Image (cartoon, rainbow, N blue to C red; front, side):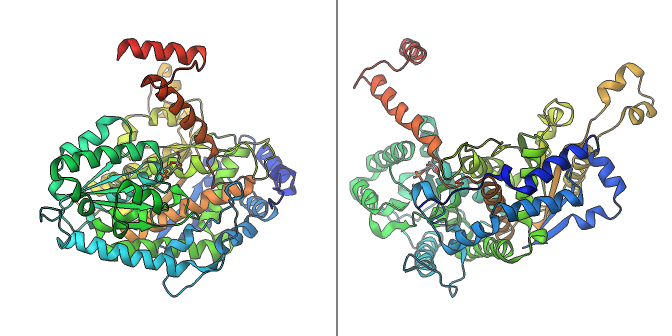
Length: 540
Ligand code: F6P
């Protein structure tokens, strides 16, 4: 039975925060920093080797206290306990939300719906480790006796973005010569580009799909299968295909040997699945030990989230700051700016995690929201973004909150390049938050006519997230930090962060249009679409 969701605007803390936002008036981040000695000490939190400094957020200590009260009054902590215990908090799909069980230590059993999920998780991890070791060591041979030198992961959304992001993030830890390719788009160029770079005799194709019905993935998987069969014959499929899925029947129907299938469960959401069997390509890259260190990092952040007091709890505070920026300061978007080329795919990964989770307009009981929910997340690594879109961050008319992610130690140091990189990250954080006044610009001797162009408004709420080193452990901890921050936001807003009904209609309509384009069926869609179909027919 669906419990009634709390309307967050009805609780006293929401009212207090609305008044606090008005009282803040024109007080800037610069003033808050300058007027509060020792602020950075009070706004710095650490857990699992991740350090968060929110001194550059536009909050006073009283606002932080009210935000923590908001979490209390909207039931965030009860909902957290329900999630961790396996209650079916994904109500619209009647599912538990248990990605935290994917990283529980072996001895830490958890019984949900009568099943020891920890034992099941470790059963799959053990099988994955055996398979990954065999592939890595060359013991796993292709149909002609060649070891595997290329892995193609075919998946989309959560079955692509997580492993693609992690494999790049951990490339310095990939102690194998195997080349990895990630194919997601139904655009035939995507699969063709990968196939062109591979030799069927030494290629392992991993079909990653929770449902094993996703159009893009199944189409690309069929294309890869046809390529393999054309090169090596039908009997080669067993040695060259593996499947990561919850749908054993569909995997068998596709013709993949169940021995090469690694399963997971309906309580793992696609965008929360990179640490499940979906991470097989990551495990092949960094080895079972590296993968296990990543799970340890996830788990350390999970433990911190589960047990630390709210005011010292990184995901709780980070999630609440997002609520403050979104609902009380009216900031619609957050730029994620990792100062690490290894984290180049991190913003894309976070786009799905944040926006597919919290882009909702009704609460979990179906009642409409009257307040903003999930913000728009996007970004690019620094320093590249500085030479592209930062102009708008600094002087545009839309306020953008920023998460700057800094990795202290480089995995491939070269001269003082790492210091250069970090100097830029710190400089951007200072300028985004503090800006530059007309007086300061004029004092530099800037001609009067240019002064307005050089004024930097600042006041962009900025969080600094720093880790000592990007390794499997910190990557896991960093991702868990965002997962739980997303949870906190969704819990305050009373929404189901774990369904994604909004993506279904487009898929259905596309199938109807496809039938039209391929001449199997023809029926008008709407005047604009019909006109586009006609134009496409003329052009193709
Ligand atoms: O279309 C959205 C979605 O369902 C995502 O939530 C999911 O990660 C992706 O598609 C892929 O789904 P699957 O793993 O079942 O192929």
